[in-house]
Length: 328
Image 1 (cartoon, one colour):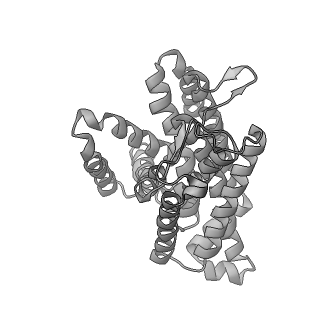
Image 2 (cartoon, rainbow, N blue to C red):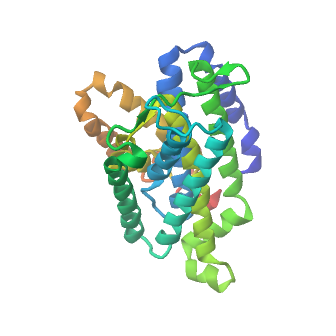
């Protein structure tokens, strides 16, 4: 993507529409569709960095997000009265630091392998963390988890208000998107793509392959931590059901549906997933939601292996290379 694309008419129009959305939408559309899309997109953005630009598919993004969410409950305040009651800024910083360390350690372990083995290691971490939180009552309050983790009032703005919470999520989503878009075009981003394409050649050229991969995990963990904090504030709770294998796979589905070849794919996939999640009940029984999202996933992958963003490029930019992130 060219630098001028960041200020293209399409980007400006999209930004204006997103900013004006609260003028047209009710609380349901602002939170359950808008804010949820931004949160999923932020978490999936880290996976796109790892998988699309680094060639490393991780299923532990929701585990990292979950640790950040649990940290908000443990070090802050919750309705069970089990929190330590630390000041909010300290709690947020602590949550991000702990989640980033956790995600980086997952990276240290995962970069020793490639392909299916990386997927299996991160899946094992996600599964282990799920059962650990579910069975540990002393720290994570077991199956019940924590409730009453309310969004704060900052500068007179009550972030529990749907409008302000929507704008909060929009700001973080925009910042995350711009940061990753710039990162993948930086020296580090280009080197990471080189590592993805041919790690041995990059190592022969003097690049520290493992360091680049671990750094990518750390950056993805920061995004997951932000998404985890926003998720807790939106749901007003955190429990093991939000960090299980199902939610971990959902993030992978979101990234693949949107397209791994561009950061915007995270938000496109998140929007599609959120719409299906909320309105599947109108088409089929709620218990069969996975059938609907599975059908949507298969349809998009079969007709466009590089996701919706690849489909869009083939329709409106014929002759362009849409399957590789390195073309950006």
